[in-house]
Image 1: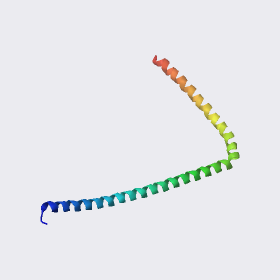
Image 2 (image 1 turned 90 degrees about the vertical axis):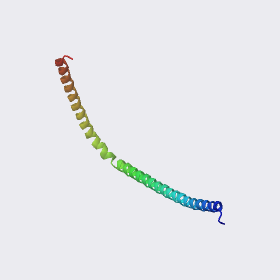
Image 3 (image 1 turned 135 degrees about the vertical axis):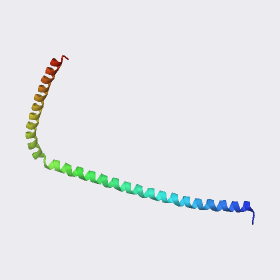
Image 4 (image 1 turned 180 degrees about the vertical axis):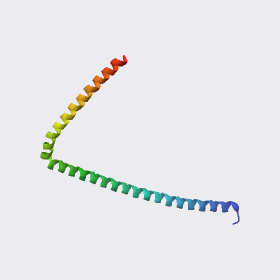
Length: 108
């Protein structure tokens, strides 16, 4: 069979088979990697969720244990907050006064 047309046919067929096999292998490998990635992401998400739940539970327990202490602290901190608010009001009043003086002197 020295017919060039027949040789070209078999050559094309062999090339198509090799390309198909390589494509199937590459596609299978890609799907495998995608499956691994999906599994890893799901595991990381599960671990993240577990850690968040654990920390929230610890914070909740800590908040529940320290309620009486927190209440005692809040009474003194309310006094501090009120003092801070009073100081801020005084500063705002001073700034308003200075702003009025500035506006009056600049003619604006």
